Image (tube, each protein chain N blue to C red):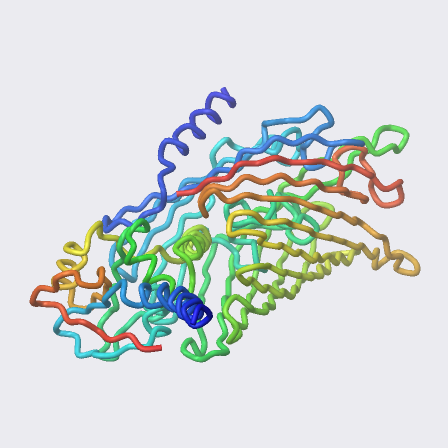
Length: 364
Length: 143
């Protein structure tokens, strides 16, 4: 049944996938699809097994109803498969991503409902293959389906300060609640780690901000964001705080991006970052290189020991037939504790898993 | 002499595409709109929906030609300093982050003119030399 639904959804998406063209109608439909094949070596990473899997995709349909030029309802529902990853076990075939009302008042944008969280370069578009350099946003920084959320049930306000000036600032504030999936480690009777177990927890009192400083150089900006939240249950129950910084430079011939973030959660500090460089050899062909890291400090353990949690190096190539039709190939070499198998929590040997992904992305 | 001819040909080769792009479109507004001149940056902000209102407080309503239209290619290069594909990528970012959608598209110069004539806050562009009926006014775009 699951495969039938998946296939049906993909077919409907493809059938609707015509080049984006703004319509004058009050109802607009947009969507995206990324289908991938991946195989790993040395274990399983993010649901990609050694035997390979094509059960790896993201897709969404977005319906936007424009009541007036300044009032809109946006509804987006999505579908995701992550191979054998435990994160997606129990996930519905289709879920409501967003459902919000938006009102534009000059440079002020107000939203209420289930809405995307502005955080860093990619949080709002982290599943949109045609907008991502690689299959997914850098994992150490953005994570995926664990410890973070793409959406919040609540309110957000965005304002463009000094909009007509060469240096201008985009400010976003959000608040509300959401469900967050955390990943715990299961052990057998003799204490050997055997699996990652997802746990959905309730997050209340989430508050956050994202600022972007746009520079006079077209395509160059710097960002800063911070948030705080109350996790209501589970192994990581308590107050969390987070901040991050971003640099984003996109020119005709190259893209350079770097982001850094720090979580302070009960008993643990998690820091992560990445540097990405893309060389646009032609308008269609881009060569990619990326280095990621994450570290963990056990703040309440004697001496607050620090652990190298992950180091990942990535190379890739993409070819954009059009801006809404992109093929990518990428190779990742990981060395850390994120692998699905071997299960290697802190204190156990690092998992050295490499994997490749070949993907096809489209949007309309 | 050969060198002079060669230099002239190179110069023509370098200048001609720019001249063709600049001459490839005409920006128009509703005739009730008093604006006569806009900078390319102002027009770009309007078509990227970063400017929402005219100075008289009226909502700005930009209207595009299809991506395949030569006038759109010239307009994108001259006003946005971007290719049509790069502009499309900008709108994908806007759409899939839940923000804005691109301007309305009309399939022909005639329909752009008709839309601008019927919409007081509208601004559009048509192919250079396209007939402009009453109800719309040409706007000069300066660098």
